[in-house]
Length: 558
Image (tube, rainbow, N blue to C red):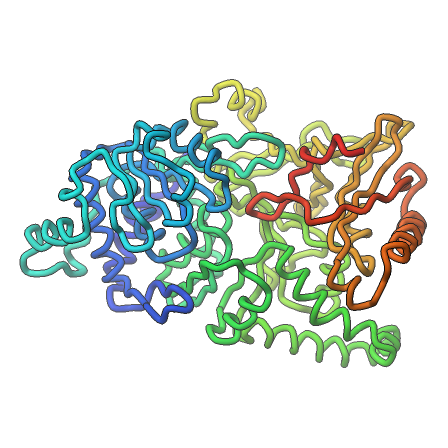
């Protein structure tokens, strides 16, 4: 099933560039350089000329790797509107992983930031005709005549093609069916080597359709874009939905620390905020936890009626910290800590949790805050776009979440075996997540199929739920719960060393505290979920770009 004609992916942006020609579209945060939709359209047209000069044809692959900036967005849109296929590469991938993706995808052009180019040599990517800098468009390395694709040569060709200038009515892209492949997006690989997700334009358009029809984005929307654009979550809403609606996005290319983000929120006052749990949890821990642990506040929060006054004050403070003008915050990419979510729900902070995956570009379920989102739920399936059911549920209704609909991939590139394994015989996509649906159709995620552990009597143990409890303890930065061969559970804990140093704890005292924390957490768990051993881990766990811990790297440590 294809989306209706008005949601043809290429035509969405043809219309938006024309209709919003003079409106501000992109700002590289910290540079005070802003592009209008018209200037973006001109850059896209110049890139089309560059593609032609390089001999790029319909369905050729163009790889794109670098930090968030306006040039990244121009390359993405130019590639798809030219008729080629974009291959976004997460900027945090190591050079050898990037080389594999470029070669595996068969990319003929590479647009890359200067810092990501260090460690890559053109000899390692023999199919690539040219590598072009995302910093300033200069050719980094190429097998083609440099005079054909340098900035001055392209600008001259543009002027020759459009001697009277380039205006809104000149924006016209060749027809492309939504059935055609738009992108090959390589997964971040929490369980091993990444796979290339083949995403038709229909899947990209399905996410944009939801963004527009839900009212989450609209003409004049303001976005602080700090999630990596090469990841499906940030790409679909911070970028594609925003520009489809005529919004304005400020692109943050630096590491999004809470300090940088709070400053940006204060200045820009976004109308919608997209975040991963880690960012919100850090801000919550630094801004809110110190307040609610103080004697007067902690006491008042336990008193009916009086607590509403404190909750209102805390909510107002938190809303202002995020700019004060956003309608809601959307959390995705990983589970939100239940204690944090419960407190935000209590103070009526406008936050909702969504659920998705790269294979669905990414959104599967979501319910806006003002439409009755539920605590601990990930919303309902996108109406008219996605379907969800639970495969082989147990007596509690928990089973694997399987999905189908407009946003679904067609398979993994050059990997028929993985594609076959990804779908049920009747065509539902296996998510690999365990969940349940309630009577109102809300989805609750219980954990990953591959991370679920079995107790001594066959009980299901969801390590993510135990980790959430551990992570709420003082002096804990993050944790991993793993299972030994004898069935006992081990908690690897990375301490919050800033907090430890500030408190003056010695190594011995920290070890003693963690043992007390183990006992405290165990008092809240069933017998079969008890943690037997705590091991301190010296630094943060290695993560994917969407901040999920790469569990498979640590299973041998217990």
